[in-house]
Image (tube, rainbow, N blue to C red; front, top):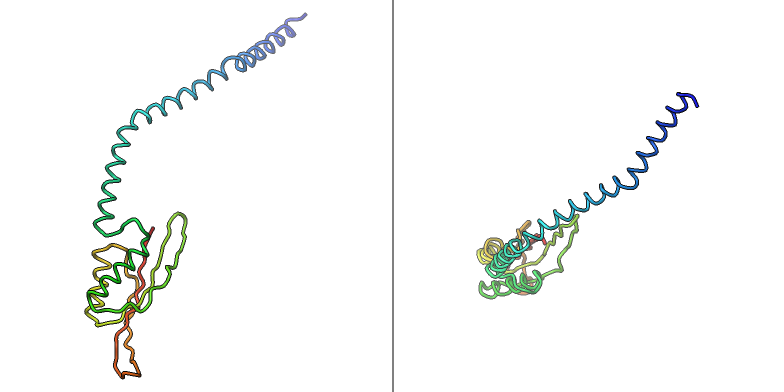
Amino acid sequence: MTNKSKNILLVAGFIFTLILCYDLAISKTIILKNEHNGLQQEALLLKNTPKQLSLLKQKQKYYDSILNKYQIYGSSVQNNLLKTINTLASSHDLKVVHFLEPHVIENNDLSVKTYQFSIEGHYNNILKLIHHLEQKTKFGEIINLHFEKKKNFRTRKHYLQAHVLLKSFG
């Protein structure tokens, strides 16, 4: 054998030995190292679990207090809104003409509901109801308020009717 063929055989053997070492030892070591790093990160997350649990319980108490403060109880927002409107309408001498089903728009993960209802009564009383809905109960925001003066032809009296659109996120 010549020196050239010995050198080629030596280089080929060295490359084969490197591939064999990588396949038998180094690749498994890299996999175990990555797994070890992942387990260490999980251990850090689990170490902070009691602290996170206590923070979540505090947040839950806070949100429950907000729901109670703004009179949003366990039933649906639509039922609570209707109950509030009826209560305020009876106390302010108003009449609920109609309350339609909410119009729901889904956009990504956000659900936007638009409630439409009509109130009949005196202007100042309607404004008191609208102010209470928007400022004190936090059901949502009034996006449209349309007043319409109508006439009852049987009694020949005029009355005021307000059509309300209330937008709520959730």
